[in-house]
Structure formats: C-alpha cells, structure tokens
Image (cartoon, rainbow, N blue to C red):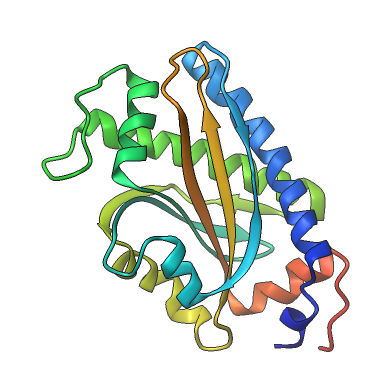
Length: 212
C-alpha cells in the first residue's frame, strides 16, 4: 500500500497534535461532567502492525475493557478505546465515586459500564472532532458500546476488512489524571482502524500525496 510507505514520523506528529487538541476538548468535557479539573494528554502515536497492536494490549488472550464505535461520514472505520480492568476500575471510581466497581470478573456494575461507555463516548468524540476540524472531513462516531473480553476476540471485528489490504493500525496512547483524588494516572489506548478506502482520504487530507 503506497500510502503507508510514506507515513513518516512527521504525519504521526500531526496525528499526535490532533490527539492533544482532542484531549484538551475531552478534558474540558470531563471536568464539566465531574465538576473538577481533569488533565489529559497524548504521550505517543504510532503506526504498528496487528501483531504489535496485540502485544501493546498484553496479548490476544488478555481480557480488557473496551469501548467500540464505528466511524462514519467522509471516512469510515472502527475505533476502540481499551483499558486494563484495574485502570477501568480506577476511572469508574473517579467518575462515580463508587470504589466497589470491579471489572475483574462478572457480574459487572451497570453504573460502572455506563461510566466507561460515557468516557469512551467523550474521548472518541473529542478526538474525531479534532481530526475533522484538522482535515476538513466530515467525521462522526456511532453510538459506542462496551465489552469486557479477550482483546483478540474484540479486535477481530475491526480487523476483518482492513486485514485484506493492510496489516497496520494507528495506536494513540492516552493518559488521564484527576489531581483532586490523588488516585494516579489512568492509561489507555485508542486503536484507530480506518477502512481500506479511507486510508488514502485521511493521508491526502494530511498532505500525503501517494500513488493512486
């Protein structure tokens, strides 16, 4: 895929800048929702192989809490926000104040699932809004859904179509900190999986002139 060959560090830096703009919007939304100051940043953005993506998640059999949504509009694709269960517990506590919420084993707290769903909705919506503003593309997220399962099974849906023409995905690291609770940072990852026909559209909007 010629576009991927030109996906240099410069373009990853652009996506990181987009991510930090989105993080700023998300932090503002979370701060309003929780009525206290929330800090958020994007430490890194990488283009990785599917195997590397599984390694980042801890292996295909690693159980994670994930929020999935489809990307719709001028481009299409799948987006996952994934958290280890202990990080999801911490974030759910920050959002609800309920320290008993535990995603280590079912049955899962309905309030906890709802909180993580809202978190994924805010984060993904803020990132896609920033990407839309930066590229002038119309991009909307679908209604998000939460699952708690082995990450290999969760991601297989998003990889099904993309794997026919590519074996790479964009990973966006995310760090959320609530200073008022002194509960440490919450670290998660976005896995951005554009559909095959959307890669050239995104790259062209970012200034990459591939051989079409």
